[in-house]
Length: 85
Figure 1: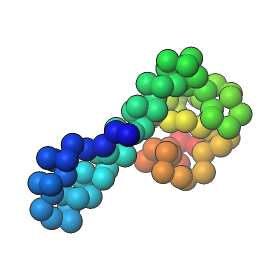
Figure 2: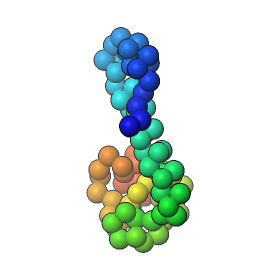
Figure 3: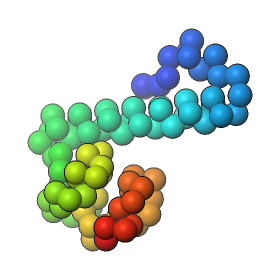
C-alpha cells in the first residue's frame, strides 16, 4: 500500500501536522486511483454508471470518480461542486 513515508509521519508533532499528513495521504491514494483508471482506459467515466463525467466537473476536480447524477457529498466530491450542480 501507499502512504506517507514513515520518516514524515514520525515528524508530525501536532494535531495539525497529523491532519495535514492524513489529507496528503488521502490525496495520494486518489491520485494513484486516477493513474490506475487512466491505465485501464476508465478515466473520466463514472464508477457507478460508466457514463462520461462532465468536463466542467473534471476541470474542477480531475480526481472525480462520479458523474453529476451520482455525486452525493461523499469524500470524493470536490469542494465547490455543490455550487455547480
